Image 1: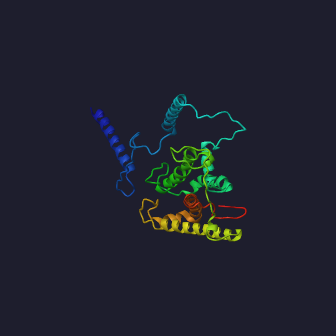
Image 2: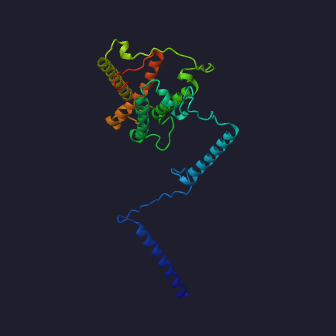
Image 3: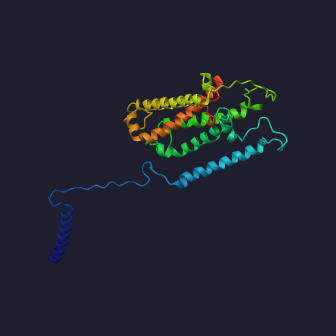
Length: 301
């Protein structure tokens, strides 16, 4: 009995010593015990900040592609393609229209010289789209595009693409008839219609008759237009208060101008002012029959 009790007492003493040693190991040198808690994140808990491309994105894109293919297939079976008669080299159609995706360029030929409408303006569009990732410093909405986070960007794209470009395509398709004359909906497309248009250059309206004076006057007008446009854009952005929804930065317009920098501001302002100039030139042509603003023997705008 004594040996059994001694053995049990030894076991108890060894267990107590191990526990005391463990407590001493967890106790800092200063003697005060410190409790360390490590947060444990449960798998699948909460909303995931990032999702894998497969299957979440690819699956949705695959289903939408199947839906689009079904719609296009049914559409092609129910509607006939708007094909005309076989091409006849001895008979030119009136009006001779480009494919729908080039009708915007063909419509711009009414308002601008071919070099400007067919080369310069499309180059502005392509270069502007390529520069968007470098010009856009908006930290709100990265990874997604909602109107609340990107009011200025979405409105700029909507005006430039839907109102300007798509409207040109609609005008060229439904409103331009024989002779590229303007026909309202319901009006008969008369191939013998002749419209007497008296297009006048803007310098001519102010009494300038020679090329040098007309060129100087036109350059002064275009330069003044860009100066006023840059000034208006600058003061509009600078006047944005702190916390304004148009500003992506809490400091308002002053902070965005500081982080934007003069180069980004200059390029963005040039593209926006040039886009607005297309609207102005269209309004001048329709309202006052003004053909060109800048008139030279080589370049006309």
